[in-house]
Length: 96
Image 1 (tube, rainbow, N blue to C red):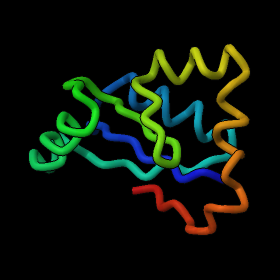
Image 2 (spheres, rainbow, N blue to C red; image 1 turned 45 degrees about the horizontal axis):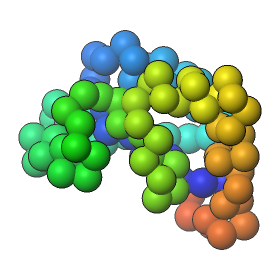
Image 3 (cartoon, rainbow, N blue to C red; image 1 turned 60 degrees about the vertical axis):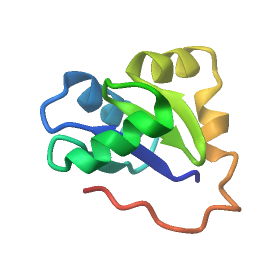
Image 4 (cartoon, rainbow, N blue to C red; image 1 turned 120 degrees about the vertical axis):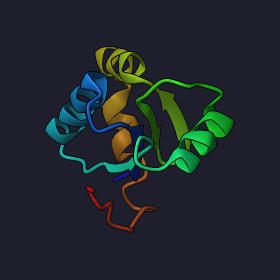
């Protein structure tokens, strides 16, 4: 299973929705709370070029935000992306 990393805030409704969708898919999410650590917000902006949360990474791939995640799911591309690296990613993902 691919490692999921999500830049998020504690009160973002789209972050909550994204996390729920991913949990329904049976994956855990490593959340990086940018409202607790402004340095992480700067890192997120540098990596993605975006200032909004959530910013979701599946493995090394930047998926985008919640709408992008839902679009991938509706097009049937999310599950293969989540499970394509099942054998190559043996590190557990911790949910903060």
